Image 1 (tube, rainbow, N blue to C red):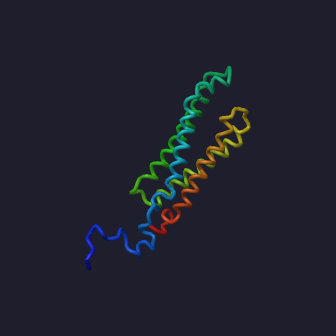
Image 2 (tube, helix red, strand yellow):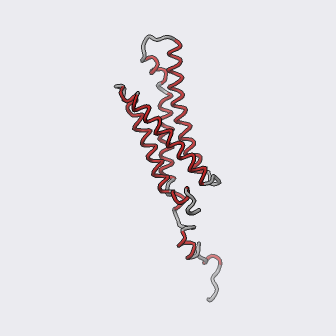
Image 3 (cartoon, one colour):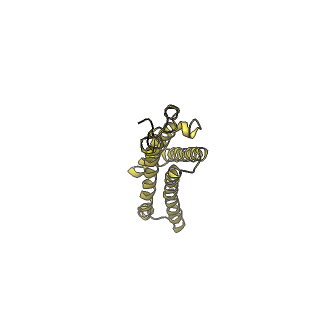
Length: 162
């Protein structure tokens, strides 16, 4: 009765629990926000790819070169968004990625999303087509979700605890 069997040992010591090294649920603190941000960004990027041809046709009678430029830029924005979202999700779930690498990726993606929101706000937001007006809102929402995830993970990202 004096000895505990191996299956009766606690999962962690009181010191470890107090220091937060083995708190349950800490691995998921910001992952939800990062994942939603990434998925939202990817979906909006995919949404750019499907109507690309009809967007170009909507410009009416323009030169072939102008049609190609508009199509190229429309596809590039969609692919950029897919890349940013994929990068956010990938770095979130790579266990071996260091806190510094994660922090750098999140900050760079946040800056890019905010930059794209500002550009969209100054240009596309003035157009009557609803999809153009949604761009800055979706970019800002994804950036805010990233920021919330970073704040929730601040201890791990800023090296305060493992």
